[in-house]
Amino acid sequence: MEWEKTLKGVFDEIDRELEDQYGDQWPLHPSRPKEGTTSNPEQDGLFNVGAAFSAGIGSTHGPGYTVEIRISTLKNVPADVRAKIKAQVFQTLEKKLPAAFPGQELQVSDDKGMIRIHGDLSLDD
Image (cartoon, rainbow, N blue to C red; front, top):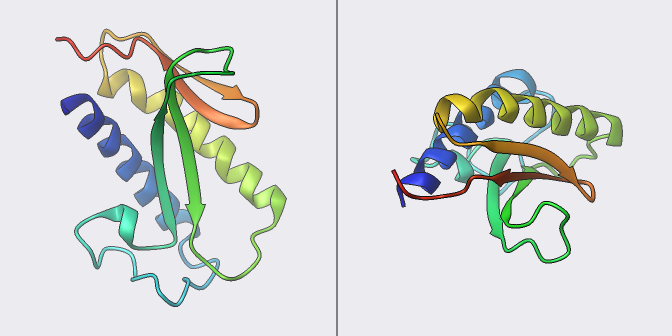
């Protein structure tokens, strides 16, 4: 679907930004390829930022996408650093989504500790 392809493009941009900023902070998990060595940023480098659709059961925001931020290292990433990265992803989504989806009213919210994208998820032109 074009909508999800566009959303993946936004996450790939965020992934690259995080790799540039934090990529040398922790060693990669031994089974994880270096950044840029695969055709899909989800499969290489320190970060994998993406989202999964949720029907919204139990959410005050209804249907949407729950954002996942994975850091592929065996080292401990301190909670305050994880919180900083999460806040950075949240703010970056708020900036990038309107440009990626012009005319669609999308919101980024904290939903029980998770970042959630919700609002006009219509797939129509």
